[in-house]
Image 1 (cartoon, rainbow, N blue to C red):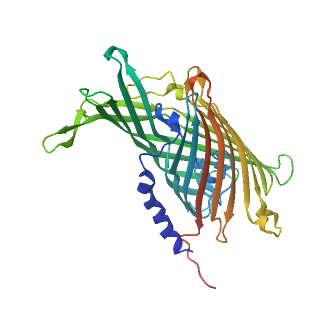
Image 2 (cartoon, helix red, strand yellow; image 1 turned 90 degrees about the vertical axis):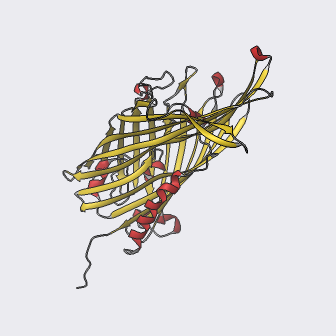
Image 3 (cartoon, helix red, strand yellow; image 1 turned 180 degrees about the vertical axis):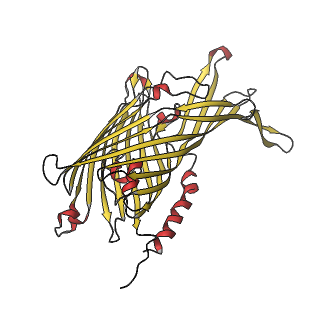
Length: 429
């Protein structure tokens, strides 16, 4: 296992470019076409199965990226890689559409520099996603009822490469800090076709690159014996400061020239001379309260807040369709392994939760809300804290009223968590 573990970590890190290279015809939520796309909240496989990030969970033998303070309590070197599949069934007053999205959630490695006192983490994860395609048909009466068809496609998103440190201050208090590089690319492609000869089709592509630095702070506190001798209450909280992104935008079009005809890309304006801007991502605050009734049963709650109402776009302006976002989550975890009882069902960890998200979008005076039910099972291995975590989500986003779209979301997740004693010389006595 010790020889196998470093090889697996290298393989997971090699997955990064593969995970980002997705098919351009895969689509996510229709609402991802607005602004910076949909924000993503995945931080730990245990928390995700309860509909939350896990910012207030006190467990150091499983990897957790929700709170930098977690990294100060670890004993093992740990690594994780997570993949997910989501199916979106969208409907409005005019029709239905189904989209499927496969993506990576997170890759992370945590090293205990000083076991159970100081730990260092390196991770990469997506922050937002935008992937859509739709058509618009109509006529131009002023041009003698000229018919047109607009094909609009887009993809992209923001990612975060983070290196941080966590430290244990006392037996019941841990703190952490994590700086990060936030980067991403968005590409929107537009093609307009006309139904009459003599009118030239119009096509153009707008690409925008973003790059900036973020800062995340975390704290984790625990208290034993609140209601009984073997219970525990845990409070965890993080703050992500605003991220100021240097943004560059370029517009290109394709024309057919020469003989034989060939397609040529022409730059309409370049990112170096005309396309410079500043984009500001909002502050994020996340707080979780967890009650461990006993060693095998916990109840967790969480509140996530992002002030998207203060988000600044490429031109440096706020946008009317963005609003502050608040997400409420509640979940339960039952660790049957700790009961010490025999039987097949007592070999796993079970999780379930529900979340309500009032959304960061307000369209036609309506908030785009999401209600989600999540569940999962953890399959442990015989090697320390290694496990495979499987999860499922089902929820509803948006509404069909006020000329909007309602989405039914079904998702599957798989996380591969490795835990090993490294940099430790073992001797036979």
